[in-house]
Amino acid sequence: EVQLVESGGGLVQPGRSLRLSCAASGFTFDDYAMHWVRQAPGKGLEWVSGISWNSGSIGYADSVKGRFTISRDNAKNSLYLQMNSLRAEDTALYYCAKTNDILTGYLTEWGQGTLVTVSS
Amino acid sequence: DIQMTQSPSSLSASVGDRVTITCQASQDISNYLNWYQQKPGKAPKLLIYDASNLETGVPSRFSGSGSGTDFTFTISSLQPEDIATYYCQQYDNLPRYTFGQGTKLEIK
Image 1 (spheres, chains in turn orange, green):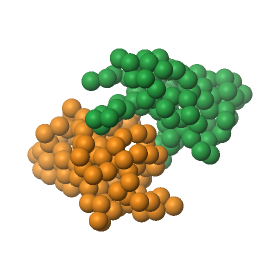
Image 2: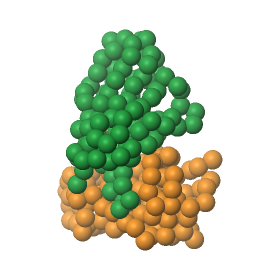
Image 3: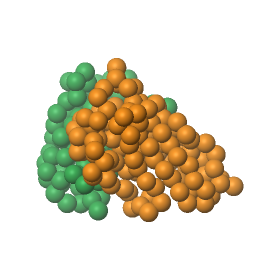
């Protein structure tokens, strides 16, 4: 059974940093691209960032480009999101999601999310 | 960047009704269009991938069609358990993804 478990969320002041983690199990992690998707309270889904199986292809939403960095450690079956210079508008539930392919594709499984609150 | 325009933003229908949601891309995305269902307090769930393919285990009353810039998602006979918010999503190889604004479906 595929499991994706996010962690690292919490309350953080504007301008500070936070690192999210996603622990994957139940599948061969380095066979799939992975993504982060967020959802602000009461709002829709917003794609944040994605990374191919070998970290060779990486993409970011314009709203986080230059502030967030996605990475993965295939030896540890883990996905990360380093978030710097956090803003109030980054407040959201952050989901980790698995694709169906090594490079890109549709999001076949999702974690339950970790909540990030940016507030002074 | 590709923009996705999804409509309507909300929809009220009766059990047994046929329900249709549309999604329009700002440029040709071929068939790289997926549909997700999200129930309150839950993570999204993939229903349709690559415009018209039904994900394994998803009831056959759900379907999708379209290519290029115009796409349609249909529930052939609305069931009470279908109450949720539905999202379209496009993807490319960069990777770069975009979600539609969502359609909140309610029972009349």
